[in-house]
Image 1 (tube, one colour):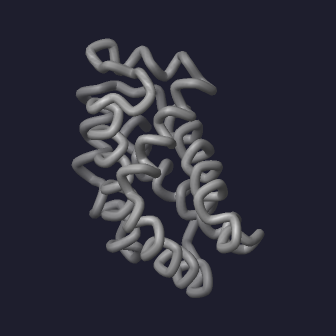
Image 2 (spheres, one colour):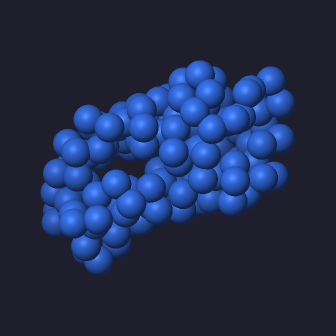
Amino acid sequence: MSLTKAERTIIMSMWGKISTQADAIGTETLERLFTSYPQTKTYFPHFDLHAGSAQLRAHGSKVVAAVGDAVKSIDNIPSALAKLSELHAYVLRVDPVNFKLLSHCLLVTLASHFPADFSADTHAAWDKFLTVVSSVLTEKYR
């Protein structure tokens, strides 16, 4: 699945706004994930998962930074996320469905932070982009 030029433009434009609030967006996305899909907490037994905890904020920042790496390398996402893909598949052994759940929570968070900017086209472009990211992160499982 490849992104169209228009979709790439939407992703890059929206990223400019997201990156200024990356920590808050990452934290809120993980809070949504853990609240909506409590089974995902099993990968974080050593974390303080209370809302706004330092560990949640730190990991949220890492998640959004990885999305940023994918945005910056939008023409070669597999290369940008290769190490992360290997880590999640071979070391952490994260259930691949969790990437889809995380993507959904990120979309909801983006829509809540940027309601005026989150048109149907923007939603569709980000959904497709995050599907590509999820696919890259799970390709080592095959």
